[in-house]
Each structure stands twice: as structure tokens, then as C-alpha cells.
Length: 206
Image 1: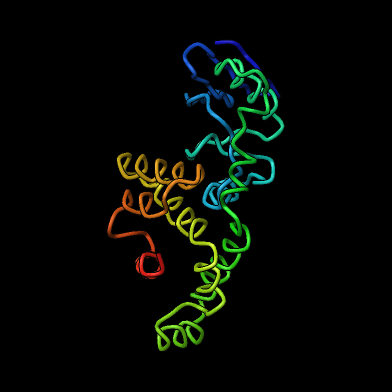
Image 2: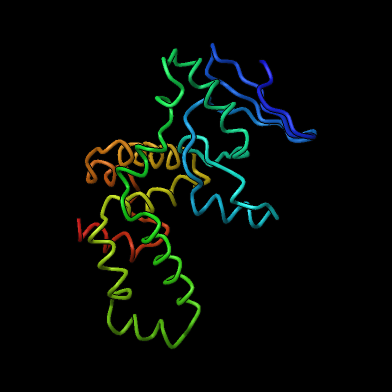
């Protein structure tokens, strides 16, 4: 493997022939696939904050829960381009496709996070339970952006401790990002999701 990025005790090495990479931090290292970078997921951001890291400085590697420093992205994308024998480096990035096919993702994530925060309020949750639905605005956003809603649901499974479930979730996320059928993506997810009410309502909407 050849190093493509080094900063203090943080280093990235790649093997373009095998489409593999190794991320080294101090005495720890992890091997990952050499694939396109995607915007940082909300779950990955949460984990980074728990570790005392600034999420703004990181990006996801493909649809996995692995991350790299954002400033290493140019070197990483260049390595991906070489591995894929791409004519142009920009052709290897999924970021433009990501945002094009997942409209409303940021707005919906913010609404989901707000609702999650409201769940800590007994009075607000009593109101929602009596109505049997999350806030009307959130439900409307889910209907308006079903692909992004499905992506957020699949994203939750991608961090499952069960590798089979996580793998199916990542496949579902890829289907959604590449403009595949939403129902095909949802069919890959377990019947008992991390957030049962959300999943049931989403499947009813779709």
C-alpha cells in the first residue's frame, strides 16, 4: 500500500489494484474499501461528537460507517479515479448524484431531529400520542420527500451491529442514491425497524 495522505499520527494508505485502503490513527488501523465519498450521515456525526470530534471535518466512505478527514478527500478521490481508470477525477464522485436524487434530505433530517428532541417532553409526546401521528409538518415532509425519508430509515440500519442487516441497509441506500425504486430499497429492510412508528408510517405513505 502507498500513502496518499499524512497528518501527524493520521495516515491513509491505498492499494488501487485491490480497491482497498488502510486508515491509520496512532497505533490503530482499519481496512476499508476504496470507494466514492458521500456526505457525512447524521448517525456518523453523532458518533463523532460522542468521541469529541468535529463532524464538519469528516466525510463518509461510500455507504459504510467509516469516515475520513474531509481535507483528505482530494487525495482519496484521486486514488478512486486511478482505481477505476476514470478519465476525469470528478466522474468518480457520487456527491452530485447524492444531492440530486435525495432532495429535501437536510430539511427532513432537521425535522426528524426536532421531533426526536420533542420526545423528551412528556407533554408534547402525550399530544402526539393522542393524535397518533408525528407533527403534521414532519409528516408532510416525509410525503413530499419519500426517497429521502426512506434513505434516513435505511441509514439507521447501516449502523446495525448485525452485519447482514447493515449490508442490506447499505444496499438499500445505494438503490435510493442511484434513483432506484423506493419500494425495492424498503423491501431490503427488516420488518422491525429502530423506530417502528416511523417505519410503519413511511411504508403506508409509500
